[in-house]
Image (cartoon, rainbow, N blue to C red; front, side, top):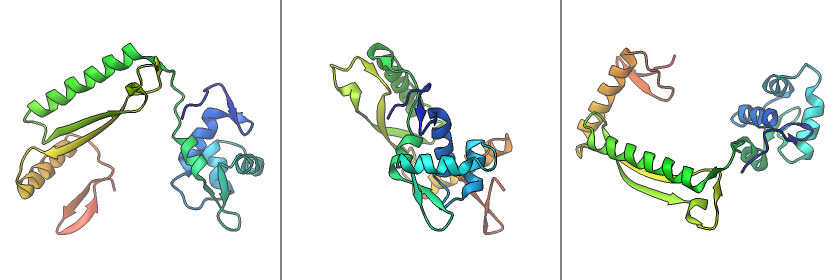
Length: 184
């Protein structure tokens, strides 16, 4: 889905609504103060915004003084505001990506390899000259067929990168046999 970056949704700037929904979509449920904070509006202005977003079908009640983002709101929260690109520009981006795939597959530093790349979406339609994006699905597999050895290599690489200051939000490190989040 594409939105006009200068347009409005529910009487508010489209980009503000998209950002607000992005912030709230992972919270189940959320209340008025969270909406006001996410939308950067003054206390007391949230009720009108709730009414407008609800009227557009972007949010719905999830209990007393609680709301949740609807499927339509989820879709809007993921919308792009980027300008469409020409087919030639998209083709160049695809070729650069495939070059990077080849580089990763040939470089022993990388522990995984891309085993399949699937192109789908509007780029497969020759009549479409302006594209919003290049839709790709990729399959990645370990370069090491031995699962346990691959896992050890992965943990070593994570530790190496963590020592250099890289943060992993979803990585869990074992400390004295107890799982501990690396971002705590």
